[in-house]
Length: 616
Ligand SMILES: [Zn+2]
Image (tube, rainbow, N blue to C red; front, side, top):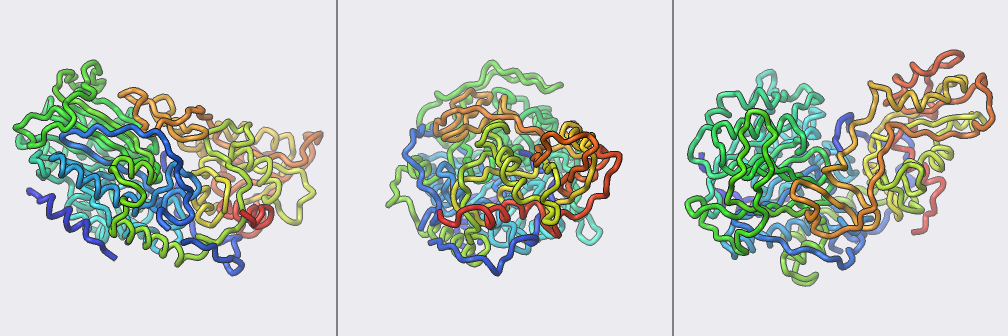
């Protein structure tokens, strides 16, 4: 099965008419927001019209190897870019022009450049989530990029409509490069491979590639699909037949799997190494939403490239013999050679001798960066490919007025994890000291002493200074869990927060690792430490550290000096009130609706409409 990558790429370039992430249910728009009251907020220029301009920054030049990779993962619908963060202000039109120019540069240099994605296209912005089906506008835009290899993510599998759309429409688009090595589709009772399980092809420069793409051992999928554990999949006959082949020069494995410390990656790596002790293996991970790179051995390297269209990963390899590739090293085989790192994978003999050398970089997703690496300027960067995509994004968003209507102006920037929750720049500090006391209260019980508890895991992104739209509401907290209220004595209510922090059932997903992953920084962006060292961030950012977030935070309103027998109102969302209820004993009421259908998703829009300035 030899695919012709040249023909495939040509056809894909043709313009056509489009943390870990568990505990998800797709939100639906509704609840508090009164759409008839919304005003249009004018948008019109490339990047996206209202995006902030990126200031000049020091950018490192890339080292081009014989084969090179651009990598995205966990885009989650952020194809319009980050309008309020100048570090990541490019949109997918800008990215398309970047990719096209980088591929042309690879051709001029006589080397290979492949574009790879590791899944999770859905859930995370209003642009992606407000439509039915979810991704109706964002997925066709993503499809205009010339990806060479793609894997599925868990956000393609939670709901049956998204799984159906991915199976019937998205996967077939890629001509055999959207691989699902361990997912099957339940087609009216018959299990079929979700898409091709592997791909074998030859690159432009003659490298014979064997590719797989896996998802971690995910169990939250709807019954439209079956996920086979990775350890089972690599023992299946189709995998064994392919992995034993001797006509392979390099393995490329994409996977929606946390790169570092993963049982699944270790199983895939060792299943290949069992038959090929030294053949190069290039691994492209995701799911954890961090920048990271892991050295498996001297010929096996993995990269993870962040999240939300903030990061483009870059990997280069030199040192391949002329029997493997026609490409010559444009800048010499003088990048990092891996010699000391032993494989820690049980049963695998470490391969520490290699002629290969590697570089990896994490590019910021902005025009300034894209222009730098393509040797262009603002005037010479654009082509009709990217401009058309940008205009489509703008017109698509314009067709959804609720996405661009300004509900109010966020008065300052409040960050998810850059600052400790005691800081007034922490989102959780702002929520518990300002937002919840003002807007989360039963209108008939405003005089009651009360506490308002929320799980922190429901919040997915910063709340940045500037116009606040429904799109921002989706980005910050997309969950539609209703606010509930019960009454309980202060003697038990005062201990609720401490009890919930250690509650086993409803505890938040694990925080991204900071020791080896990415640390969010204050003024500029990411500072990453990985297996190659600390020089991976393509733009050098100022490191302000990061803060651990507890599982829950709480607002206290009028509770000073009250006695243990005083009855107080306890507010929480339906996501965790079943767990909280067991800590509230004695003279309590049942959980009741706090305020009709007022939900977690509606909280910030209500704050915006009632309390924030409309002038920004
Ligand atoms: Zn994700």
